[in-house]
Length: 271
Image (cartoon, rainbow, N blue to C red):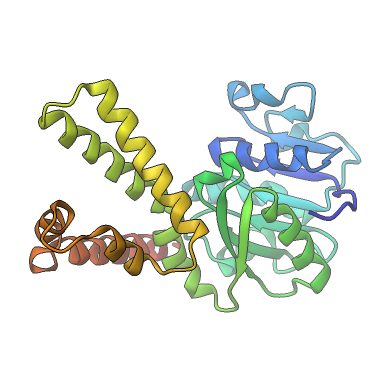
């Protein structure tokens, strides 16, 4: 991240993702921030480093953020966003990480002057290994896009799309992707126990296998299909297991249906 100082930030919501982002920004030199979080325990890890208030009405007078980050649940948008409409304008960037909420819908709550970047990070942001895809809404200028890029890069890799509709499949694949990987680890652990391995060993082995495979995938120039083939010896044990997983394209078809379902849900959340 650039050595240039970050502007004052207003974080709305300090749950798991909001907190992960805030931690990344503090590591990168954030000096002035206000967090709006009604649940004091959620913001407790940041006590003494940022100002925490329980409602928009308690934001200190005169505080003028360069960016407002909306890290609340999409279902809370209607009740929450209008309270921040007074901040909307050409000088203030809003960054939303709410699944499904479109820039048009958010501008309807904040005002048409709002400059909004819609972004979808994922939970590996907690260890600065996230992947975020962002879309610049109407009126977002080059400087604001650069600011959004700096903020999002504090928690991992960042990419941009120029078509907002692409954020919905991004939400399904990247936003939800960690859950699918964790499910894989969960099922591998359970299956190992079924085959007689001690539970502690099954858990360590499943976690290390998933984590190590991810690290290999990140480090390799080969695509994932080739890496899979590299592990699969002809007539070996892995080939036998994959024959079950891919019988009648069972696993591929299920994954396709799962991503399609999550994409559709993201679109539904737009309201």
